[in-house]
Amino acid sequence: MANPIPVVVNGATGKMGREIVKAVSQASDMTLIGALSRNPELIGQDIGEVIGCGALEVPIMNEYESTMAMLSQERELGVVVDVTHPDAVYGNVRSAIAYGVRPVVGTTGLTAQQIQDLAEFADKASTGCLIVPNFSIGMVLLQQAAVQASQYFDHVEIIELHHNQKADAPSGTAVQTAQMLAEMGKTYNSPLVDETEKIAGARGAQADEGIRIHSIRLPGLIAHQEVIFGAPGQIYTLRHDTSDRSCYMPGVLLSIRKVLPLKTLVYGLEKIL
Image (cartoon, rainbow, N blue to C red; front, side):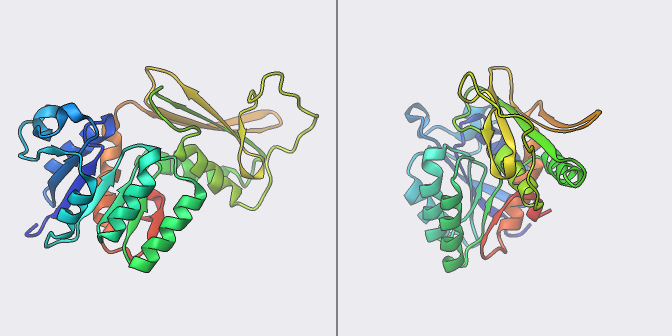
């Protein structure tokens, strides 16, 4: 491209951020112009050298506001990909939108009210924003299959499994899956007995329309989800397993391209496929 998309990665030295930096730097229609990290020991170092893909001539920075200001001055519309922490992402997204920068958000943990507030802010600014709980195409297909199955099953529970460094539970993907099933206009898991939890939380968290979500956190896991439907005489299980974060990169690059023409906030990868 004559005018590649300028991109900043926020959370560039984390596990997901490193993969995104590599993917963006290799994309012919994008140019990496910034890498943000909260690790003080890495500030000023070349992000490419830090993550092991060779010098990219992009120093690691930690000044978010000034980076957004720099990105807003680029000739082409800029995009910031945020894969940071639930405590910081809301403020990050508001700030990016205020500068006219298009956020692509992979950080989960935003509340429904925060997402609504950001949607209203993006509308007023006529600035696109993408919030994507899961960038995997395979997960989108699982969710679509779950919605289809929900027409025939009245009992369903969700199990999500992640590495033990994930800060929020349940995962944004599990919450989104439950929301999609709840939107089918039915209540699930009508009780047959009065349940008693001998240990609080043993039955998991209850989302809308009676859907239960169970969260598992263990070293050795990356990101996994099961949606289990039950009916007399049968169990139907949908499962998606992540073995490497590279599986997210096609979705990340697609989101960067698709966010540019948007004038509002869009939630979910399936909305742009």
